[in-house]
Amino acid sequence: MSFDLVVKGGTCVTASEMFEADIGIKDGRIAALGEGLNGEDVIDARGNLVMPGGIEAHAHIAQNSATGGMTADDYTSGSISAAYGGNTCIIPFAAQHRGMGVTETLDLYDSRAQGASVLDYSYHLIVSDPTEKVLTQELPAAFKRGITSFKLFMTYDKMLVNDAQFLDVLSVAKEHGALTMVHAENAGMIKWMTDRLLARGLTAPKYHALSHPALAEEEAIHRAICMAKLVDAPLLIVHVSTPEGAALVQNARDAGAKIYGETCPQYLFLTHEDMDKPGMDGAAFMCSPPLRDKATQDVLWQHIQVGTFDVVSSDHSPYRMDETGKLANGPDAPFTVIANGMPGIGARLPLLFSEGVGKSRLTLPDFVALSSTNAARLYGLLPQKGTLAIGADADIAIWDPAAKGVISTNNQHDNAGYSPFEGWKVTGLPITTLSRGTRVVDRGQLYAKAGHGQFLPRAKFDATGRKGTHLPELDIAR
Ligand code: URP
Ligand code: ZN
Ligand code: ZN
Image (cartoon, rainbow, N blue to C red; front, side, top):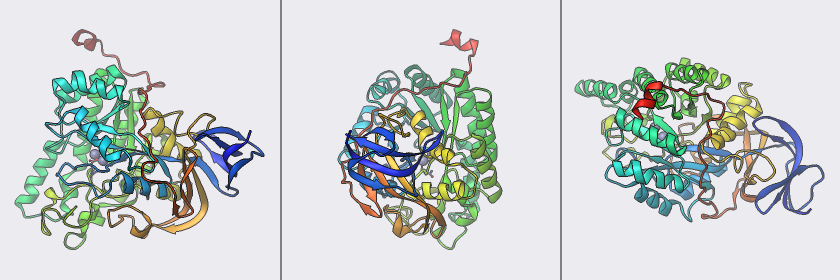
């Protein structure tokens, strides 16, 4: 058989094994794994690692934020930055704001993504207004469209749902086979802390970290897990930033509950001291949950190593340090009206590889699991994406494990105008990303055009491996 493209002589890595093989690609799919394959086009991967492309499953792109602003990246710039960073698939959010329908929301994001992305994409649906119509008609219609994950917020005044609404969404999600994701921070504790800080005139960006205490995350994660256990619904706690939160996820999963966890590079590599800068400069590092401390980083790494976290995602939330973004409410605005979030879609994998594999915290299969395969499994994309197997999409990242680089705004290819990881030295870089067998980026050059990326309808959530929780009282209340 002659292939359209052969990736030749590399070391292939999946989430479970490593092997030397050529990869033969035909019609955008992996058609053969073997020796001596020939094709019309060949990529010489000798000395390099050949891995499933990263799946970036937590990114805010072309999205209106909780404070009203628009992210700096659209689907073109966001997906290009992702591709340069070794990703081949993105799952940003489609945000339902109050008063909007779910179908209307998905149509809006379709119009923002169609023809724009260089990578295949789907969305998680943010549900902020779970009306009766949303619960009974629009969420089931979203499943039919292949949107099989929802995100709920327990904080942000304009986005949060109450506990009863949370349970309603979990129940509908369970019934249809969707995964619920949650931003877990206690809104009341944040408001109470914020009011006191503002009353004392403590408005600088660095006080954002104080206003979101670790206990607010611990309490909300505990409550969210209890609610998921009540209805035996799968729940993924996103951007876990505290040892206490991580321990709650670990205990729940050890007990067989359908609880999953995510953390992000900013909680592994940055601390709240990065926010302690003159003027508004600290706003560049404002995200929620906020950056914590060095001791927390060490504990989160331990949790990554023992499997508490299924995914390490960027939570890419790009806002420029100007009046279009972080400074939209003026150069002296209090931290309460500064958009939360930081860019990082291009830096996620080089940082995780360099600090994880390069420092022997992770094996190469661990890296593949955390960066790609687990996201594919959680979000209904496996085996089409997230693995190197015959029949899978040829979504491949070729890495030079010895390449050295320095993360800088100039090499991130996003529109944020800054990188919170500026100056970080990394060893190991993606040199080629292939999407369905087509070069997206190759040795620094962008080849794919906007519109190459296609919408991906996703499959139901598969909770295999978790016994779950069964509460007899729910049989009566159902
Ligand atoms: O600060 C952050 N993470 N902003 C993005 C929205 C969210 O909470 O994930
Ligand atoms: Zn969040
Ligand atoms: Zn986020």
